[in-house]
Image (cartoon, rainbow, N blue to C red; front, top):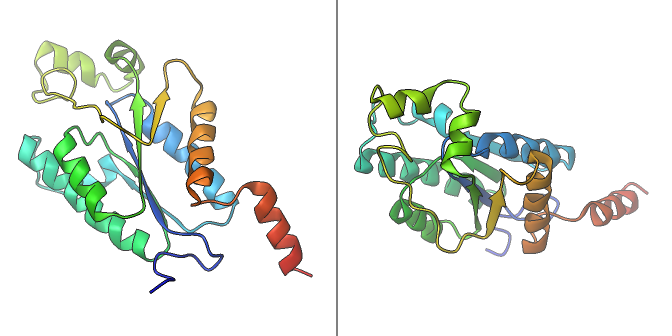
Length: 198
């Protein structure tokens, strides 16, 4: 039982859950973190909110209940992967605290990252024009405009993406994973590699 959730190298699986408004920078930071983890030869799977809705949650709408069902489905898959030693990166708005907390209770190795950017900054970044459509009423139930977003009360990490670059945010995430013991610092990993290859 002691090896549940451990990678071949001895590193534990984890779920890194990015939550925040559309346009806050979740996917951008997650992609940088993913590249870093792959460079360190970690097993990684990415569950992006948009992709999940297309493949896992097709048919769900945007009511509070449907949004929570979507989050719980993502959490179910993330838990299976985490238990088998995989580093899971979730990038999803996941606007409601009740669903996020339920997922946290189910996944032992869970790291919640609040990607915090002001609404006006998110709207400025929106290349798809979704915020403009939401403000004009063309899109209903849009998080942050016509639907609420419940920020985490005690996330493991807060990223202020309006004040720092995506690379700076990603570095903070990597440092947090190292601090929690989910990822070896590069110098330790390099030392282990050097000894094992002798």
